[in-house]
Image (cartoon, rainbow, N blue to C red):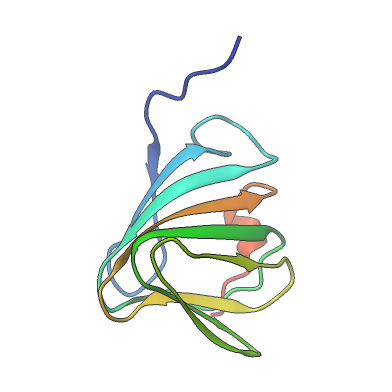
Amino acid sequence: MPTLVSQPSVVEAAGNKPKRIEEFVGRVNTDTPVVSIARMKSPPGWVEPGQTPEFDEYTLVLAGSLRVESKDGTLDVGPGQAVIAHAGEWVRYSTPEDGAEYVAVCMPAFAPDTVHRDT
């Protein structure tokens, strides 16, 4: 029988401003270690520390604009666009202008000890 996930768990976010992370599937809400699926809502001017995660992150922007910085350049990802950040690559996410709503899928699932944020 399929498992209904009736509501997400809200998890703490990193960054300079409050950002809402609603994990629907993952280590916190469903005890799923292989994948995490979360809806993110970040305000204008939000920026988080850079990171070099041990997981691939697939991000689909629903509204606003998400900026993704890497050592090779910067991408602005708009509504209806997606970006893939590969495991082992340094990235930094921000929403410098309008804020954003987006869905992030991490494989394996996001974990604080595997994200490796800059200090």
